[in-house]
Image: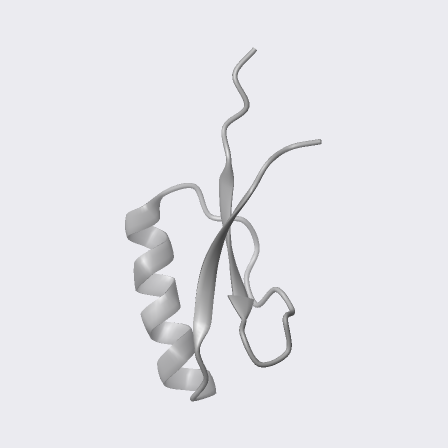
Length: 51
């Protein structure tokens, strides 16, 4: 069985997740841009694996 990572957006200032899991990098990039505009802070994309 292959583990497929999911992407999450993390607020760099607080270290907290700002969005539920995202499946595609394209969607993650769009969401990252939107959250950075709304929050006015940097948001990073991280991979999360199922446990």
